[in-house]
Image (cartoon, rainbow, N blue to C red):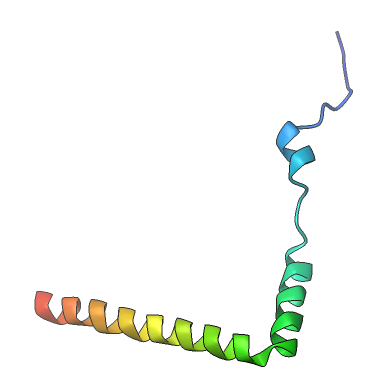
Amino acid sequence: MNNTEMIPNDNQSQYPEKDRLRDAERVLNYLEDHPGTGFILGGTFTAGGIGAMIYYGSKLITKS
């Protein structure tokens, strides 16, 4: 039996593929309209990055 009909995957029909560039554009436009949010998020990521550098840097120094 040669059946060439495509059967849609249930997961694909529930969750269509996202357009990542459109999502990024939407986020950047939001941050452009709400600079305070961008400032807070940037500070959070920076503080988290600095905290991680201190934590793992101290572990690196104590292992040596």
